[in-house]
Length: 211
Image (cartoon, rainbow, N blue to C red; front, side, top):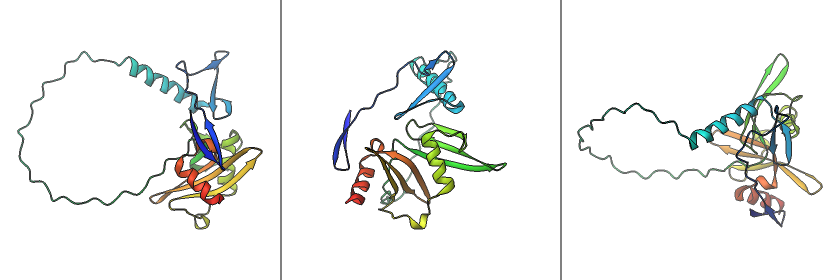
């Protein structure tokens, strides 16, 4: 449990950790995933990643030990080396953590007239390949629609340092943001980010623009 400030109001955020018996299934063959406030049937890539995560946890709990004895290592003779002159490294550029909600479109390609996207769901970290506009879920569909119909134009972005607010939309008490961050020569776009997915850097950006 933690708290954050959104639009001048203090909001309590409760994070529910996943259970230990994943993947969850109904009727023995229907796998579901929970993303923020959305529950959906898992697609192929999500099922594969659910199983891989379970196997990784089991391996961590019960590591496989090898019965083969490691060969004896002979340490090499240490030679004295002359240390190079010390130089002061240039200060590293500030890095910004991505939001923890929303969607990033990693890759898009057109095949036989249909555009297929690789979707990075920031709510759970899953990478889903071959998502089309027709097959996409709600948030994925919104991100794909933005990329296909209204792609961000870099020259029109109003940067605040290396981050920017592209668009803000409200419905009732809910607010969603489209955001951008510069990472060297690359730009990452995050679509449909909710208040609960914003860290201090992103919240400061929103509050500065809302003033």
